[in-house]
Length: 309
Length: 238
Image (cartoon, rainbow over all chains, first blue to last red; front, side):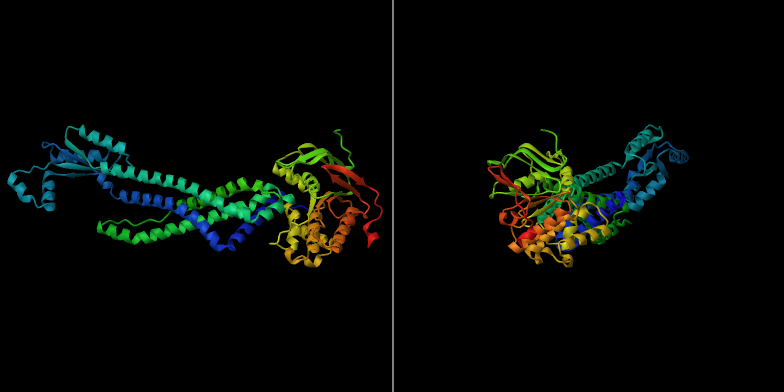
């Protein structure tokens, strides 16, 4: 009796089981599609939410200017000293750039942007202070931002410091909640998908009861009997992952038009970004893992009970 | 009594078995099957003939006593060890236990596929087995399209294709007419002449009593009689 090498036997047995499982699913396209849809939707929901969060994070990145620290200088600080101070601050760690605005420029900007110029004229003198706008680097953390503001308050030339970062911090926190929600959703739906897949494979096992009985009678090892069902789970999961990817792209396509309109209304330049390669790979791997886990659950639970009565 | 006779391929020593909630099916059964022997188990329905075969195939395990194959006790074991034990056997059933979603060739090839043989070896040995049972021209057929006798011969081909030491047959002629039953018994004798041991549970006393093989009659869960005296082989009763 000639036996192929262990590697060639391993490879050929797996190839045979894998192709047979795929062929079986191919012959029942509706049932396969429905099962794949369960996994696809399970993956598409959390992955879509994660993608939404990433897009919001991207969009909020364009609003970094709202992290600007406005430093109002005392009346006695000359323009030359103000400009020098702005240059000094610009060289500090965590600062992207600074913009000095003299009292006269502030007054002019106020006149240009409001209809309250006559009120200022009635005051007789310019009440607006000179100021330095500090634009932090994007990488500067909230803590670093706070430290920078505190440092400005301590300077003798400075009358008052105003931070606009509070809402930005709130947005970051909301995005973190969204990201965590996607994870929780993935775990909850993933568990449901594993159970649904387990049930599908259980039905598959029941429908092939006689085949399993005969295999056991002729001495098939448990791994040999398990293999086609595990590959069925693998293929269901992989196709489910592909369904999820298609669903994510379709959702992105459906949303991109309305989002573009919304962004244009706010004169923004943001465009919806699709899933990156990393997310696509995660979806495929997660789909396959869910399929395999469900199949393993069913096989471990039901296979050993099947014997010739 | 722990030592085992190396001439024996199968031994039952004081074996008892009862199904859940039922009375004893076997109660102190003793017998042995010699290498190369063909042994018949007879007796009325429910006397435990099939139970003996199921014990030998490790489908169930003795409540008391010992079942030994090649001197090794068949204890409850993991599924992997049970499978390895069954690969030493060939099994034949009254209802054939063939798979109707695949061809005759694939049914017979199953024990070889499990053993990981190459495609060439599988093809060669399946066709040799088909030739041995006289169904070489039926390799592409689906079992359910064949007669009962042909289906049983496919079952026999599947049982012998991996060249097992021992074949267990449970009422192999139970669904066959007398002519087909005779054909099947002749096949068994041919393989037995080639050295394969047989343990066969059957009701067909008329058919086997002229074959010249040992018969064990079971009654009340134990052996009631052994008949070694039959003289002729099947060829003589045609």
